[in-house]
Image 1 (tube, helix red, strand yellow):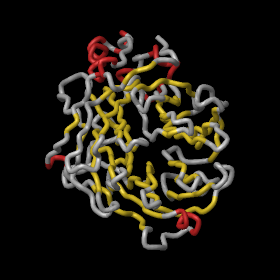
Image 2 (tube, one colour):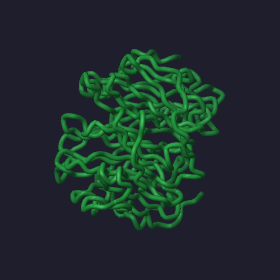
Image 3 (cartoon, helix red, strand yellow):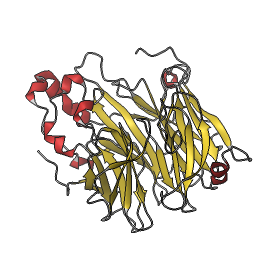
Image 4 (tube, helix red, strand yellow):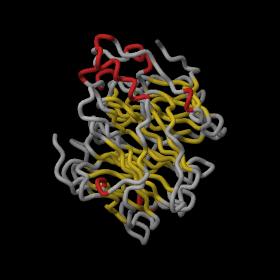
Length: 407
């Protein structure tokens, strides 16, 4: 069954939850009958106990960071492992990232060990919409990836409150979304949703959801009603894709610029009709296969955070650098080195209410197990150094100190 481009799902009316046909019988009767468990929302734990403290957790993978209108920072990372044991932890800072709260909420399925497959939550990000509402987008899947997964969201109207109130979880579509939506000049919201390629499906489920194979690509989902409904507008299949992890930028000429992770580097594609159709993708920058970050700043410039210099493919995930473009990505300046060490990865960021730039990333997920943040300005990027009162490297967000996780 092919999902039509005009498929719409209301995330305000959870009763319209998307369902597809069950997995192919060849995936095994017991497993196939269990897959729809992923359509049941993992309970959001808004009162996490000491079992989620730094001294207990044993893994740390960066997901997303955002700032509210009131100045509070919300950050999320993955604990448990980059696998079917993954769960999400979120915390806040009210002092510009100097100190961080205990976990504010946790998404941890706690499915029994003896079930055929367990749910996990792993891909996620925070986003503050134009009205000041805070969104948390995340995925659910059976096993590490069951072939369908599902993009979910919760929202908060009072994210600066002592006790923020979050909505119930709502399912938007299949797949996942690692990076933030953008707001177009016409007011539309455009979200980068991906449904991973078949080679990412966990081994016991290799034959699951073949009816979705035509949808395995980097999608652009649109909301024209401030998030009440979302509709798939179009998509593009990235050659040699490696999770896509795509990001969207609206250029000054009105085109949408899509940048995606691939095995050969950072690929690009353009849309001149708001995301409905896309140009043939090609590699724009050499780059290690890993997440990068790009964002339009208040100045109109573009910020790009990536590994290595612009024309460099580093040997591993090292040398996170920040660059600026004043001409919509045609040329780039600066090259602020955020962290030169090995095993630094998955940058995400925001521009603060005071104009400063903040980029969160992880360092050595399974051993050092650190979530770090760099704070800097556009002037720092151009000068290539952390000079100035607002600039600071390697600010600690979280450090897991529990017993080492099993491989």
